Length: 475
Image (cartoon, rainbow, N blue to C red):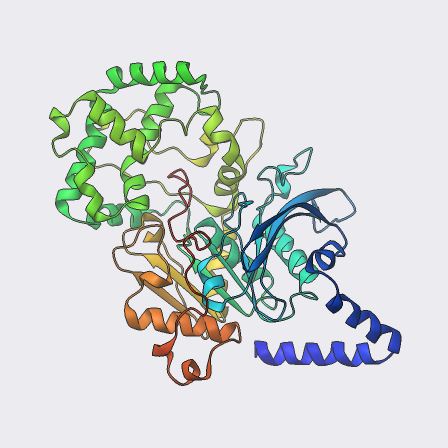
């Protein structure tokens, strides 16, 4: 259906173009110009920097976006995007991580699979892509999807082959929301480790996950360190105070050093499973009660990070916590292995991590709408999860209305799960579908999906395969 619609659209454009010789000349002219010139000819596009990379052109750009897509006349801001250009004859992958965009060349997994171009978008309100002054009510999933839609419309005349959107974690969520609001833009969606917190206050799935993940020995080690860190709160918070003073950290947003300390400790087990693998359990103190303060501190800092809940650590991620507290939802988990007397604040909600002068009201229907739409309308969508990733405890699921869509789980994988980590038959199927959606599947793959493999060779510098490490409360 999508290919048919594309063909009809192309035919309509062709007929209109051929109606006058002048229009035909104008349509042909951009093909003869340098790609940088073509990009900068897009209204609202400006160059920040071009960086060389063998076999590609890489551009860091600013694109003028309306603050409010419903009222475009009421102010604009500059949104940072990057373009990894290979050839206009190749398909294009539209990537967002849901946060800041890297200004260094990189190639996401679908881009390697289809051997294509890559357009990457910085999410609105992450600096420097933030309106000034910042009207936080304009930070929502529809506005962000509309950012992507305008970028796609601006670049589609240049990159006319098929497009696939992708992203990991919050970026996977972003790609899914974009598909929900603009289902005719993309020819396929590859969403990695995308949480689906449908009902914000029903989080038993996370508690079940932590009761079963990994091995009992590993869970006992992690739980032991977490509990012991609260038993020794007085001594370790003294060390935290010295650490904060040395680095000039403050705690205005979260409220106090003690509150930040407990939040870090309660993130510890989650952080381990999000970023580590089962084999890393050997690095966790086996006997927490007899571990030194140094051993506890170092393990907590390595996995959870004592700098994050400072004002300086939280500030770059205000947009995420705002969205988590207004639309995305956030998990609430319990700690049955820790006596209540040791827990003073509990697992804190997103409101605690956003400055108080920014108003927040939760919209419970936002994620229910997305979940319902995916179940009933998913077309050419692929969801990939990691077996040991906490964020996969509440995944997207497909309903009877879904077509040519799949949900796969990589065994033993964490928040960096990808197609390459799937079992053999699922890996081949996922790769084949991505190639087909991009309209670059070799004839042999069309006949036998088991033959599917990435069209571009792996490049250790360009191909990002490690999990994108972000603080643990965030997807």
